[in-house]
Length: 115
Image 1: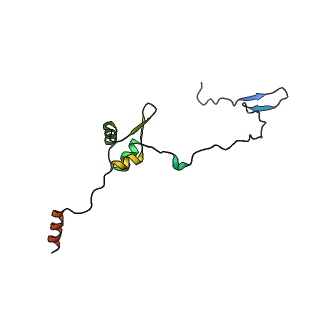
Image 2: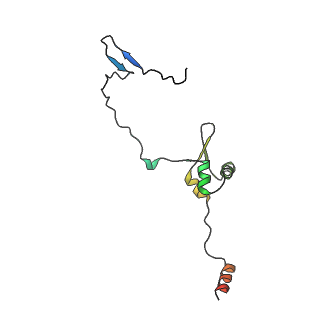
Image 3: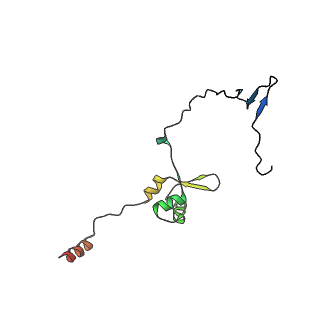
């Protein structure tokens, strides 16, 4: 196939000289009635992100995210042979909150500094 080759549109020419495209049986300018598809609401769909996006969002390297997947701490999903995706909610669950209450030793130091 040559560079820049565009295959011709499937077009049939009938004995009466009428041209119809494909197997739709429509004449030029006619439109086919299409029934609406039943698609689930967007809220029910699951979204995944790449390992690189997950790592950048959390602030770690891609190797760290891959280690989490290899150790079983994080679920990874293959799309095809090479593409790897993770669920953003699972990545967020990997983050653990740090208690904000000061330890007794640091509280004593803070009181001494004020007095």
